[in-house]
Length: 155
Ligand code: HEC
Image (cartoon, rainbow, N blue to C red):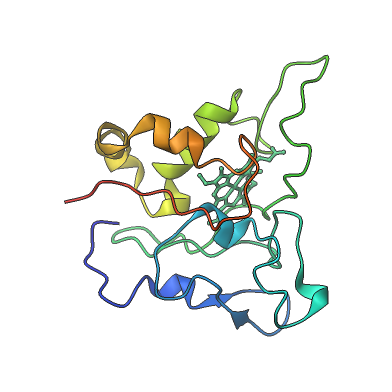
């Protein structure tokens, strides 16, 4: 995560599918929410490539991390439409109920494996994370078509 990437993170070069990979809409950049929760980013290639905040893979690739063999998320990236609607039962996010608020989900995601952080450095990541920015970056908290590029202040 702290590596100097003059040409961007290689994981962004492609979007994986269940077949042939597609060109990554954010190649040359670093990990962001929309790499895994796509909308119309690949529509210029085909109208069939529009997503509802999910991607095309069984498991989404994550940034490479020294000392850890994980290369993908444990599950597929789900649709996010209506994911944060108020309901009669308590809200839970991720299929294993990892988060109970969307704020925790955003902070946990920005400081977790999906963004290349090892569990051992999550506390460092949290200290460096500008929290209001993180919540504003959540695609489900505020609707926005702009590519979402949450930024971590890293040395
Ligand atoms: C590397 C891919 C990846 C990135 C980057 C990513 N996500 Fe996800 N997201 C996933 C996967 C996979 C799941 C399902 C996780 C699970 O069920 O364990 C998920 C689940 C979610 C959910 C829960 C949906 C539900 O109904 O439970 C929300 C909301 C969400 N992501 C928002 C975000 C936000 C906001 C960001 C950026 C801060 C982000 N994601 C970045 C892959 C990613």
